[in-house]
Image (tube, rainbow, N blue to C red; front, side, top):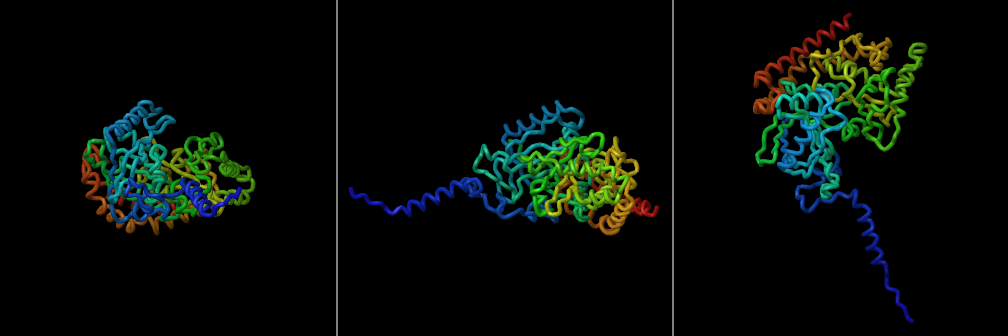
Amino acid sequence: MNIKIKNTQPVLLVLIIAFLVVSCREVEVVPNKDIQEWTLATHTDVEGVHYNVVFPQNKVNRLDIVFSAEEYKSMRSNLASLITAASGPNSFSDDKPVYTPCDLYFNKQQWYHVGVRYKGNSSLFGAYNNGNGKLPLRFKFDEFEDEYPEINNQRFYGFQDLSLGSNYNDASYLREKVATELFRDFGVPAVKTAFYEVYVDEGSGIPVYYGLYTLDEVVFDTMLSSVFGSNTGNCYKPEGRGSMFSANEFNLEDFEKKTNEELADWSDIQELYAILHSPLRTTDVETWKANLESVFDVQGFLKYLAVNNTIQNWDSYGNMRHNYFLYHDPADSLIKWIVWDNNEAFLSGSAQLQALSLEMTEVSDDWALITFLMGVASYEQDYKTYLKDFVDNYYNPSIMETKFDNYYNLILSSVTSESPEYTSLYDGSEDFETAIETMKTFCVSRNEAVTSYLAN
């Protein structure tokens, strides 16, 4: 029998190409034929993160959120059940609000089946219980990609997660934004922020103006790579008693991992704690300092204290067991302090707590990162040096008055367009005017306080 063998090279080539296409399907970004708006720049992260579009500093963006009636009802029902079951007046149980699908519109583009949920504690509870519809939100753009494969790896100009703060109880609308800018300008790691007018269609087909919000990037989404040049180190969101670094209540379970979650490794946090509480602190302080500085960015933390204690924020480390992140930076193997949630900044205190004094002598040893470091003369002097630099060159009344005036002019129409059902103002636009002036006088008084402290 004469068997002819055909040339198999073309067939083989086709099979190889088919194999490569199938193998790469999970990472390949292909615009969906049904989603005309889908481009590499707008709906993926292939071209990087577009900060200039999402976080402009000289304009107020507009964001439209569209629900079906069923989606909106489900989202509100979930929130109501969580608040009813809350363990305290301003805290959820272990359950967080669930993500609900919505469509987003921005810059004449549409994002499909975006996950959105309510976020926050006092800003959420307080507004909800007062009947204020202006509630803080959190977005995850690929939350529903399993249900809707056409949005696989959907991004918002490169961002996977974004956070919308409602400026709750802030008649100036500037606390979160200005505080975060001051930290970042002074070299303390912090997220980018921008102002947004938010409109919500609750399913009726009619958009409702929810008011002026402050958009924050999310630390473990884009900020790590932007600030540190990587996101491969361990990132933690401490919350609970362990976050104090107290000898009495330290607990690794209170350090929620936001990167490398699959690795059950908290050895870097354990090492920091062990060095911090080493007997060398009282027997050989120079060795203790060297050991601490080999694992923790001490100077970065002292800079954080200088800014935080100057502008004041009662809802932060030394008072409260949350509102910071830690990042183990692969570039220098140091754990870095990242500030988070500054909506209570520029306030001397609340009904329950006062902001920390410049001396911090009222802080107990339970807050070991403060008391142990400030117990070292050289660190205390570094802290004072940072205080002077900050008030002289960053939080100076002449500098800040210009900043406040510029932001006032930028957001005035957005603020005064808010309705009574969706606002941070109790007495109309007069509240806004007064709050801006209060920010200016507060800056003057804090500069005087720092000058007096340094003189003594």
